[in-house]
Length: 197
Image 1 (tube, rainbow, N blue to C red):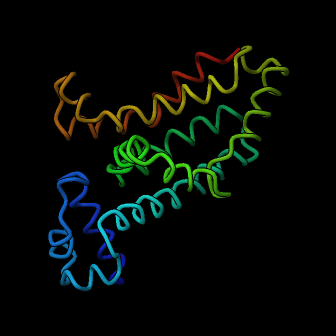
Image 2 (image 1 turned 135 degrees about the horizontal axis):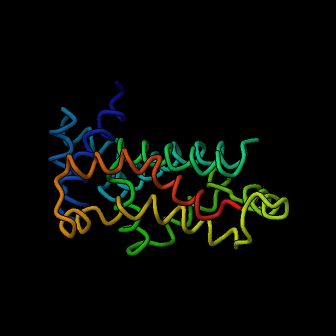
């Protein structure tokens, strides 16, 4: 494992446990097994490290989403694959939704800077496909963008509001993770059943 990988892994753990404001560079260095001078040599500030982690995670997820959006699969298959792939990714990277929301509130320009790059998820082909499957009578007449909003909301929200959800419905971390595993298929089934003609 490279020094950068050690730092990224350590920073994810510390940011997830302490939040951005509570995280300290010394803690990240200790978790990575390096000295603080080396950490500052690689990343000049906590903010730059935080942004690098977000870019790295988004850079891994975006191509996976685009692969699904641009495939030759049916819309129903794409919905199923998206919910499975996204939830699987976020289970492995649980800090990502909270980090993105935090940055969207604190620094929207930064989030938009990597959202507008070529690697971002691009639903143009998927929207055209939804419109065609509506015309072919496969899908009920719906607004394709509303459908995408429903899919994203149902997959993203439980992770983005994880603390609130656990408290509201009184579940443990283990129960939450079990529920997310079930949602890999249940979200797709609910959406498909609601739009199928």
